[in-house]
Image 1: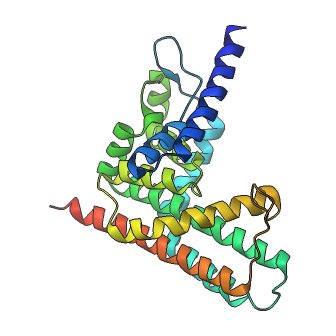
Image 2: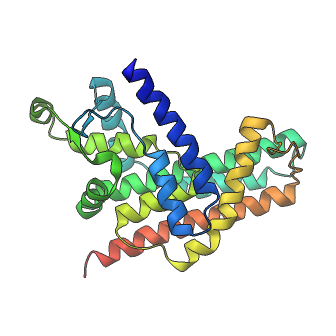
Length: 255
């Protein structure tokens, strides 16, 4: 009964936190509240420690992910090529259905690229790995059996990859917070300038995926090829800006 009560209280607290966060005007405070929401973990014991859930399946998946990120084509190059292809196909079938599909898929491409770029940066720079372990809440108070580390020297790296993979990269406020915590530097101005547009785009994507293109009030998003193309360009500019953010942070490590 106590366990059920704890889970219920967690759900109630998440709802309150979400409603409060959405009404906060101060960007830094709102981002902090949303970070608390999206990284909230109920499986904490009486000592405030999180039990590490990382089985053999997770280990194999993480190993494959690390191999892909370290040996494959650069994430941004893949993203950019697919976005160009998506834009070129916009006017071939400009029905309401295809516009919604193109819009939502553009956000999916953004999510994948943002996740892969961050994970690649963590794998490439030990300081970014340290920043993530030190600053991201999901890595705090974790209990690890020594035998797991003994059996697998890449255990910690694999677990970091698992956690970073599980985040929702269309939650722009969360993405900015995770990037800042990991890279150890504030967002450049060109990122802040694009944030508002990307939040709106992510909201429309949410309406497409969960309400077939209608907002909470029942109003339909009428997407034209021109509107979708503009959203795609904003997405491309934002992702390119995040790539530059990583590069600048990497350059700062050499000083």
